[in-house]
Length: 221
Image (cartoon, rainbow, N blue to C red):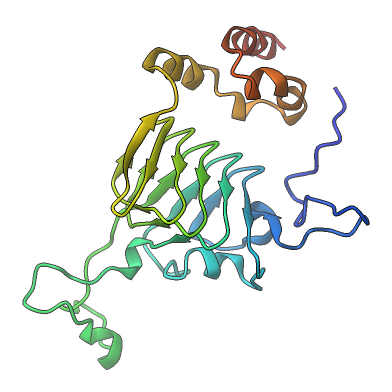
């Protein structure tokens, strides 16, 4: 089935009216080459002032030598000003001082002033993270989560939940639990892109029966 959807390897997938690329929006897989990032197909980020280094802009404390990872699923939408504050940004919290002495005296082996390795930060599929949001170390966002603009998110967020505020709190569930369970079983984001585009109406109009029928058709191929 043919589709004119842009390849996930295209840096700038959105053309302007004059045919030039919109440089403020990128498919992250095409612009990120970092050993501690794992990013899914068709996930995009936007910026009003596009950076030269998208990995450093979005996750400034995730270094090539960091023990933790930033894992982002497919079809996520990351707005301008979003930051992932990963575990390498942490200081020790259990001592009498939080000061990272070892960063300055450069004796890292067994340094008492540095914390141990922290957890990965994991973002599910089809997650929308609003303008200026902050995602804190070890946060886990389920599939279909929406993060409000300016929110500061920590901990685990259940699939298809809207969160907002500082600290972020659930605002509402997007769908009933039984609908969420059916969507999690369908996993439309794992289909070939041509099949996804062919069933765009069912996905975007929340036609669950049609989507389940499409899932059966995709599985039988």
